[in-house]
Image (cartoon, rainbow, N blue to C red):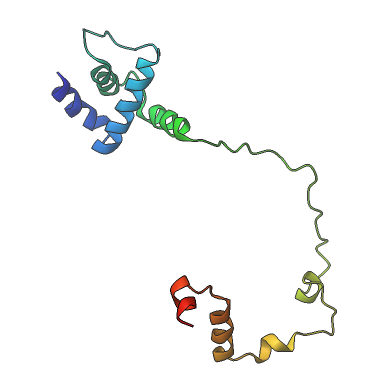
Length: 137
């Protein structure tokens, strides 16, 4: 009976691995007391779950959603912000200097004159060294 049920389920859920996950989840929900939607016919819970999927008495999409929800440890609730950010008027142009808090006449000359070699040396000094290289020095 189970072999025929798996073949029938493949038409509903084309990925066999997903079918196993969905049937396992449904089987666990049946074990925890969820009502079954078909006659048991002396079958065990995994076979009942496969038969339910094959006969489309439960939706694979709903099972997938339930499975994902059951695996989540933290469910983020999207709450609205208390205060909305003010909108800038359309007629006003904002420059980079204003965004970064710089005066209009100030420009950072260091960023314009740095060479690639200086940049690489600076990045090399920022990288943490492993414990083996510290011992050699």
